[in-house]
Image (cartoon, rainbow, N blue to C red; front, side, top):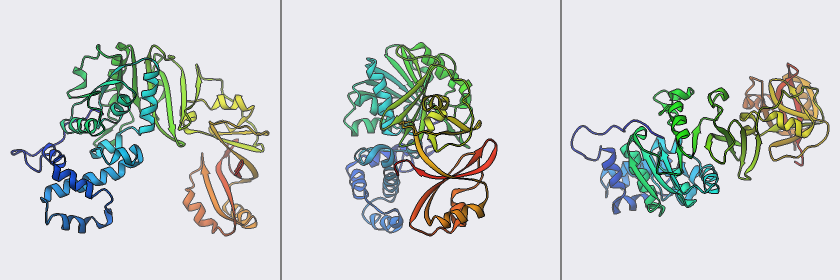
Length: 409
């Protein structure tokens, strides 16, 4: 993720200089502090800081505590074994690719015989690490000196420095012709938060696409909500979910990929659904015995119609991504529910039904409804030994509540 240079002190390099502060963390004293803070309790941070400042410089203690917090946050993306050996910046933790997703992408490159990749806008090096672990040599580039230094430290910490060369430079000035493939991860956050216009990415999507088209193979990481019309016909577009949560979209270019196709990949199973072109709009009809909730990657890839065709079902509303059928259908791309009741929207009716069924645990799902799940649960005053799932949605345009339970649950 390429971004502007981090601010530094205006005087001589000292503890307030981010590069100097980071270098101090890598000294024996700094690494010892980080090891001691691995399991620290953030709620006790003030007391911990007071204690450590008796024997260590205050600036080093502050830097170590900040890094310890970042490592704890990074465990969700990198796992404890890597996270507690790596270094992070606040933006790096926020924007880095989850390890499982980066490994999937690196695996696609490796399966096509890619042996070297220019990783442009590398951030703290998460993708470079995954590529190197797939046996691929990487040039990792970021224009922020601190970020580049963190990426270099991470390559060394994980024993991958022989495969990862880190360079602090403007990615637009990097020649990529010596490499088998290019990977670009533009910054999608600015001073005001998330950026939705692909041309406002840094660098813009148009530059990234032009760079990708010059390479034998390339991948561009983009936001999952990117408009399909912004993708262009030269790319294979893939949406990736992990554990049911959509994490990112990737545009693939070059030999081995299918231009104009859409793809949904579900991790950790790696189940993949593809379509060369969008199918016609699926039929809409009454709610049947079963309701299917497509994975978010399937929805983002506009492949719901493919699921409808496979299960011989229909949508419950032309604008809602809930599928229904009269017979059971099993698929890795959907979660199936058996529907027991259908009610017009109304809190009193739902409360009476849940009380009659002695429902004490209620899962609330919604599409096309403004009701917040927590608010609904609070108003239901649930009590009883049973559980249920309620869908707040629309059926043929009408606000509706569907009650049921997971198939097999």
